[in-house]
Length: 409
Image 1 (cartoon, rainbow, N blue to C red):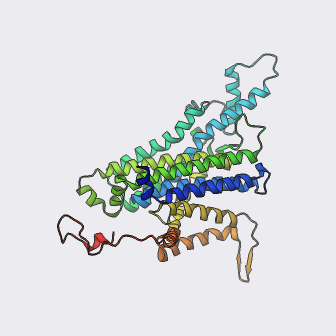
Image 2 (cartoon, helix red, strand yellow):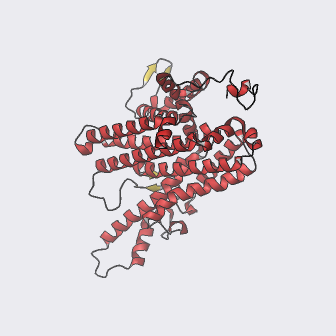
Image 3 (cartoon, one colour):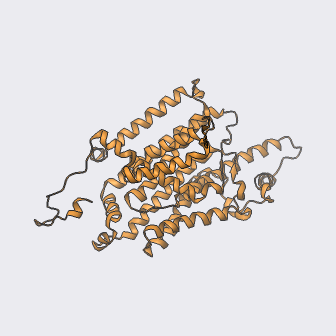
């Protein structure tokens, strides 16, 4: 069974091998190991792997099921919020406990809890823990919520949208509206998640105050690499069997798949929910490396970035989504780092930090017009991968059942 899976998905061992090699090289060359790679670069690489995992989940719904979701960034941010609640609570509890340790009268748990609440929610004029923070002291509960909260949101939204048979651009607009509504709600101070301030200081792991950030960055790099590897194997398994064939059928001709008796809405809901769960895990690994998560991270433009990465990488190819996210993310970090000198062209002055989005947009248009297979198409050329030629073949039990449009699908 394993051999058959790897035969159908030759990119899996290549991807896992590349991840292992890159992680090993970065580990031995990192600042934590005495090498020359800076901690900031290791963090950037770790966050890039998380973005690649989010792009992978995006390709699952868009590239294979034809669902252009512009709301996946909401699932990404929610994953960060869920793990951020535990990080802030546990770290603040440690700080408060240490500061009150020298008191003549030992503080009660309730007093510690009130002090922790004041530290966390003082910026929004409160000292009480909102109900949504009731499980924030439990790491395992918050880890479960990293998956459950984005999945539940996707399940409810998907059930309402798919059963109404909303498709195409209308579905994309609805997912974008869902993301915007959630972001606007979280901007409010009474949302329970500190409003515009968001959750900060997430890079400081509770109980690991003596561990240098160089080592912490390396830990997160390892975790991000493992998550991307497992996510790639899971997505490859999903799209390589019958389930994947049905998803591609829905993408190409939803009415025909429904006519054949398959529950189209159920398949779309399943893949949409799975994509949300994977994206939530990616966000839970990303934001502790970024150090902060706030509602601005959930604005719809970020979901468009995900779509651009997948399009540039080549949608409908898992490795294309990963390549697109990694290449665009690293190039973006380079152009927006402020290290490149401005380019003075007389009447036009190019400031790379400002012009990067222009170049990204032009790249997206160019790929759409001239290279619809994206960067993944270059991999196809290198490996000499071709679509099987079905012209002239019988596609049914009877001779003559061939259809030209089916051969081109």
